[in-house]
Length: 426
Image (cartoon, rainbow, N blue to C red; front, side, top):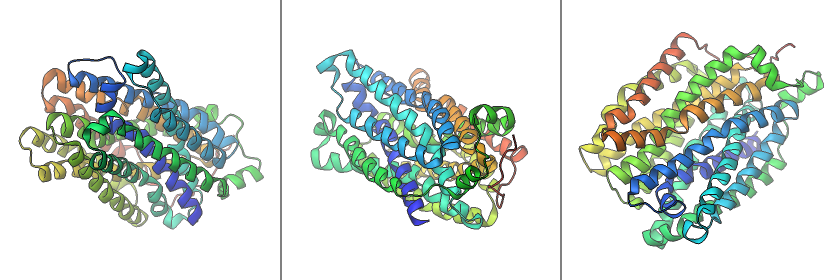
């Protein structure tokens, strides 16, 4: 169990670290890898648009690894996703600048971002299923919370690395070449994760499915035919979750802290490192509580709190420059988004029958995050640039969270204690 948790956890941390570190250095990348522009917000918008491209290709990863995970085993998908991320991170770290190779720099950036998107699209679903199928029913949420906390630990490591780089090298060196270092660190972490995953066993549930001859030949097709209602709810809830999380984690960092409030990169990085560290602990505590009280209260309550609080909290960025006040205004939505994400990640995977679980969970998950959530930082920055109003820029995020809370209240069942060994009879 310890090896399964460790292999799942380190993989998710690496995937999230590598995928999000781009978002944290988007302002720098926008100036170096795109055609020169006089307006820094334009460069940021271009970089955030490419950030969204990675999300656009996450559903492809869901399709590819959903098929592999349900037909050939969770472990096979588990290893390949991490290998792809390592390759993409190496490529990102070695990218030439626009001054050196012109538009080729932008093209290569997009290609490696696509590869990152495919990798995360496969990892996000496979890792959750993998650890759940190793866990006892009464501890399933708690054990899975360690994997889900990769969405706090990954950003923590990313911004901490960026902070250390800024302190040691200085802002000028970071903007020149130091932004590459986090990607190279990601490559080293990926190698460690792949080695760990080579030694972990296949999940007991997939082993049973295979021994009983219940492996589905076309898990993607069967999923859309037999569990489309569940997949539709997964799509909506994960889509809104993407909007919520990337608003709380990326939009606040790049747009509100660095661009609107002009807070130094080092200060912003250490503030977000601390917030994500607190988020990691909060997710573990919430996982323990979910095994006692269920998943639905955290899903409904999390979305509802986010919907109500985000506009007044983010409006503070136009009122004060006090770092402590802005950190609190950022931390509350961020912690809420992390706990809500964990709630739906645990619950939605439990809800899908075991022989189509990876496909039935990963595909709508990644379609929702890819098409609804991933472009959120770009859309928010664009609306802010056009209107100059944070109210307009994030009002749609608040409405989306409210809709998700209503769906959770009216349509979504409690999955605490559900038998996740059940298969779909074909």
